[in-house]
Amino acid sequence: MEEKQTCCICGCEFTGYGNNPFPLSNTGRCCDECNGKVIEVRIGEATGEIKRRDFRELLNEFYDGKTELGLYTSTNENNEQVIVEITNEYLKTSVFQGNGWIRINIYHKDHTTEELYER
Image 1 (tube, rainbow, N blue to C red):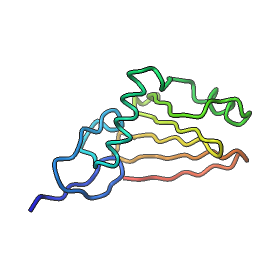
Image 2 (image 1 turned 135 degrees about the vertical axis):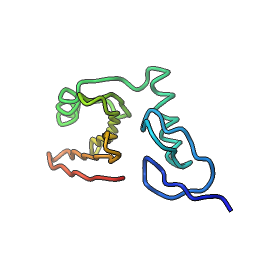
Image 3 (image 1 turned 45 degrees about the vertical axis):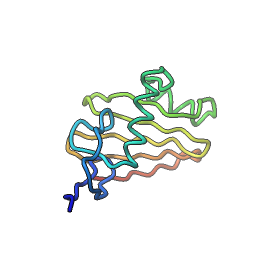
Image 4 (image 1 turned 45 degrees about the horizontal axis):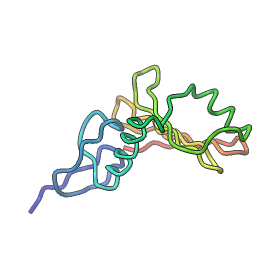
């Protein structure tokens, strides 16, 4: 019987070898579902489809309805990986913190915000 592991991105348990989570995490292994997100970010970075942007500029453009929908990646001042997802309804940031937690902030068009933490 294969040993269970915990995904370093979403925290779910999985069996098997797992996947390299970089650039969404620098440690651990990720499950197959999260590996899809990892691959999406890698392809976007390689093709230039994921752009590095200043967050304040991006947030203001989102509130003004002037931003492109999509996925963006960057690093913050603490050298932590940041993924930004922009939809018509919200702008969501996921910060892969050095302490192993993922801080998720969701900014809605009505200027309300949510802050969540995942392990």
